Length: 96
Image (cartoon, rainbow, N blue to C red; front, side, top):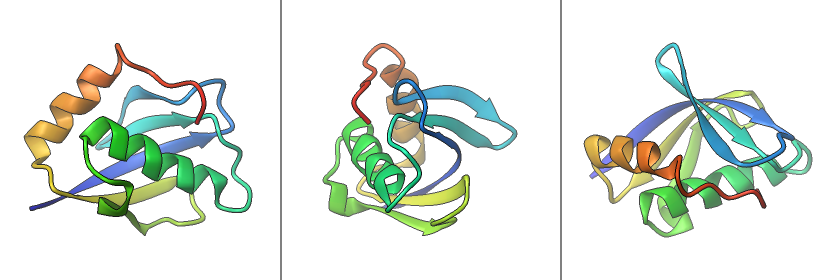
C-alpha cells in the first residue's frame, strides 16, 4: 500500500513540525535550510519517523525544488498516516 501526501513546505523554520492544513495540503515547517537538498532529506526523515516506516519508503514524487510537494509513503494507509500526523503534534522534533 502506498499513500500520497500533499505538502506546503516552509524550510528554514525554527523547528520541524506540522502546522495544520493549507487547502488540501499539510503545512510542514522544516528546520533544515533549503540548500543542497538538506530540506528534502529532512522531510523524508521526519515523515518516515511520523509514519513509522524506513526512510527508504518515503519519496518525493513531485516538487523536488518547490515549496509545494507530493510525497509518497510506502507501507501506511491514508487514514493511519493522518492519525500519525495529528499525533505528531505532541511529539515534535526540532533538529530537522
